[in-house]
Length: 280
Image (cartoon, rainbow, N blue to C red; front, side, top):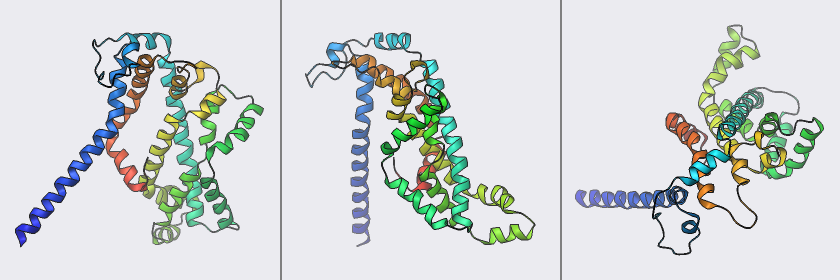
């Protein structure tokens, strides 16, 4: 009886592992296809023959061309500045707002938090026109600040940090109050350090969303010297045709910084996703 149960569990584990491996392979196919296309010629890349998978000759002409024609150092700089300032602003404002909504009592608290939840339910594209008008009135188009502007505050981050603060015991605040701490000291030295995992999760989500954002950078920045990587790659697509090897080569080069960051902060990345309970 016991051997039968063990065999059944072993069989179930094997099936689960097979399914997970197949799903992983399916998810990696587009990435491998991008790598293979980058080394192909235009004719091979646009061939309708389904059996043309690997290039006949592995040439690096596409990489050389896009590296010469595109200022990747400047694009990396703009993208990193976009990610850095969005993460800093989002974590700072969301942490303070989350503490206020999660631990403090003030008039209109539930009403204002309902507005934040309402903002999460509305598509972000609705805010593009008023945000652009604000940036235009301030004469700040084609600047790094224009890229960062929509991420100065985050409704999702406020909700995430509120839940993190609400999960902390009230005894900590009472002990801090007895030790003579005011509200700011209690927040800064007692409560905020205990929500580090939620801050990391918010930072990861903010960095990923900022890295792959496309519509806003294309609208607010028309200067090629102020574009991030995503917007610069979008400008490579022609109206009637595209050089797919060059497009895939540029995309592969653009992926390198994020891959390096993931390899360095892999542990924090996984912990942040697991803590937030969300998915990308």
